[in-house]
Image (cartoon, rainbow, N blue to C red; front, side, top):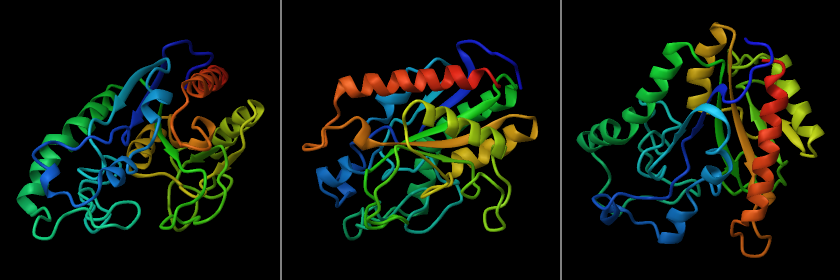
Length: 262
């Protein structure tokens, strides 16, 4: 890695669940309500992460119920790359309108591969030292989550490992050196945020797939989740722009401090 790098930092930021948009050609097949569709995205993720001073930012354009950019292209089943149920376990499609194989391939070619091809090109060029796959999460673990009913920390960092970033037999190779991940957690803690590592989420496809490749050449990949309670109204759940701006400044400071050891 580099010592004392400056803006724009040689990092990739990915925001795969930034949108709740559904293409017009697909919307008639969807059985979910507008509220269910709205709740399927990572609220506030584009506002929080997309303006940070990094070399490359890739923002998802469509809802994860259409195609989940944070899944392997080979991931099948109800929660695969073309999901059949939403995060709450509700069936996405009206009876008789479940996507067939031809439709799945069309969606991969239209929505999935263009996004990942861009990331692939940047990773292959060797110009970046790390990737941060960026998300937001509910303040309390929802029903289908591994931490159902638990109050969540301000930040969850994931490197596909255990509670201290260590490699585990179940998950295999980590995507970021444990020492670096713990340093990231220390920086965030120094900024007044509570942090957990790999709990409840150790990292999805984007962080693992590209992170392992980056790590082979001395880089890293992580998943970062910010608690939506940090930037939403406690009554209405709506985004509060002043809080978003405050969180963005914290993230800028985090990157500045992190750059001193990269």
